[in-house]
Structure formats: C-alpha cells, structure tokens
Image 1 (cartoon, rainbow, N blue to C red):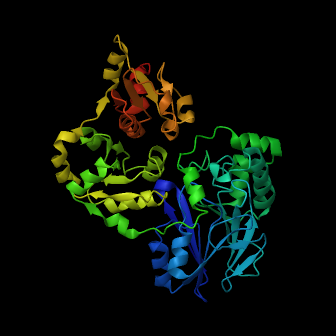
Image 2: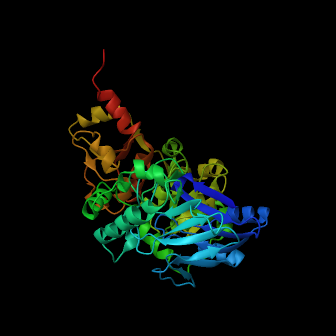
Length: 461
C-alpha cells in the first residue's frame, strides 16, 4: 500500500493519496486546488487516480475535486447527503471501494456538516483492524469539528452537535485502539478550538486524551463542543457554497501575470484592491495608499479571506519572487479575481512616490503617552476571545480580526485608533483594513499585547 499525507501549514489542512502498489489504482482524499503535487506523485509511482473523495463540503478552502477530475478523469465522491451542481458518486455507509488488495470503506460521521464521512483504509480487504481512518473534520487530534459553521446552513449547531456526539462517541470510538487517526486539519485551523500540532494519532490515544472523546451525555457533549468557539473567517460561507458549485477551474497562469506600473495603476484606479503581502515592517516603511497588508509569512490565505471581499478584483504586491505563491494561496480559498501582480515592486513602487504612505506604528511608551493626552486614542484589540481572556489593555475595545470587516461600523471615526494583537502581525492587517475603509488616524502597536504586558508587569526581585 502507498499512503501519503500532504500538509499545508498556512491553512492547517491535510489531504491524502492512497494507492494499491500492485494494481496502481489510487484515490485522493480532500485535495486542495493546486493539484500538481498529487499528480506528480501518482505519475512518479505509476498510479492512476481513479477517484477523488471529499469528506464534506469544506468551508476553509476550495477543494481540488474538479481540477483532479478534469486532469485525470477520476470520479468525485461525497457522502450520500451531499447535493452538488456537478456529477458525483454518493457514497453510502459501509460501502467499500476496492483498489486491489487495498480497500477503502465509507463511514458516515455527520456532525461537523450533515454530509460528513470518514474513510477507513484497509491494507487488505479481509483485515479486521483497519490501517487507519481519515476522519475529515469529524475527529481531530485533541478536538472534534465544530458544529456551528456556515457550511451547515439549514441545520442548527445543536442538531449537528447531537449528530457529532453519535459519530464520535459511538462510531469512531468503537474502532480498535490501534487504528491510526488522520484528520483533515491541525493546530491553527478555525474548524475547531483545541487542535493539536500532531498530524497523526490513534483511536486509543484520542480515547484517552481528547476531551470530546470521554464518555458523556449528548447534552454535555453539545455544550462542551460549542463553547468557546472563535468567530470563523468571513470567507467560510463563500467557500462552502463554491465547493457545491460547478465553478471555474484554477488557472495556473494567474500566478504568473506581471503588470507594468501603468497597467497596475489603471486597474487600481478602476477600483481593484491592492493586497500588499510584504512584512509589516516593509509595509510600514511605504505602501500604496489604501492597500491592505496581509503578510505572506503567516496564515496568509485565512487572514486574506477574513479581511478582503471575495468579489473584489485584487492586485498583488508581494515580496520578491513570491508573487506566484501569493496568487496560488488566494486561489486556494476561491479568491480568483486576481488581475495580476506588480512586477519588481522593490523598484517599481518608487514610481508611485506621490501615492506612497508610511504606516504609523507606536511603541508601548508612545502609546502610554498618547493615552495621557487630552485626545487619547481608542485602543482596539483584534485578538481572539480566548487570547483576550488572558489579559487586556484597560479600557480597550475588542473586535477579533476575523470579525472586523463585518463590524467596521462599530469603530469610531472621530478619534485616533491604536490597534493591537498579540505580537504585531494581525494588528498591521487590521490597521491597514481600517485605513482602506477611510479611517484616518490609525496606528498599530509594535510588539502587541506581549510588549504591553511585559512593560506593565510588576518587577520581580
């Protein structure tokens, strides 16, 4: 048997290639849109990709089922409750897919979404203990999939939570302890609240250590898995809908479309939004007015999806040589309206000298001084609710970054603003978004709350 996991750190997303090495028949599970890696690995091993299976309608990324089907001729599989605009094979609970000796068995595990399935992997059709189970978003390492996302429109979080209780406690926990667990996400994903950085576990380990796998009533389970969930990024609903639709395929040419300064300026004048993927430090030194700073070094796709309009035309300013990467990462969340990128920004930005502006960033001492003036700024905390519960700047307002684009009306326009996060990355994004929407006096805090807390912590002897 051939078994490979492909993991994207920036989306905390895992996908899988499973094949029978004797017959060469292969299946890809939960693929991303840029499919070249799966295809290259299959070709290198002489495999034929016969099927692509999605464990559910993903909300946090646009899956690559259409791209793989177009490239390889594979059929597309979902759980039996799935409804799509494109042809699919509906997979029933207990159904087996033989690749030779290697066999996949479908297990319905609704709860994160109604159509969710898990996929048992058996090295031999007659094995009594599966090699592993691909749990999608039903069971993570250290957590379970949240039942309250927009991907589940039409079904309440309580209803899904009760489905998830049965799926986890009575289906997945009924598997033998030695069965390996391979989830669709890891730490950092917004599809859960307590995901581990580990990418593989076992049913036995999860039974012993995962809070949601301990025996409990339906009511207790629903209460514990729905409590403390952070707001999902705004693009989740967009992607959940697109994953049902017969959409356009990813065009790799998008990643290699340089624009001259004149073309870039023309598109910008026509209303395209500039996404500046350079570091907060480079952005602060000088950027095009109105540009939104989403640094490439970080959770770029998720953060871009949280603050940008999915329908907007985008123009990319990227760190040298990373333009294609940035455009591809936007495409992974279905943001395909990328007109192109500014060629050689280190040089060509100088040609926009009259339209460049610095971003004001304050030190803790400067903020402390500003708070003591006759016109003190409002401090805006864009961390998650869990982070804020650990401590906050006295008198600060709180809007998590994932919610800011939809709550701009709550941000005062008649006083200066100082934005902070934990360390200074998300605050640069938030401050640039506020400026993009016309807020004039906006700064962000260097070092974030960590710097503020360190400066105000009592000295130890």
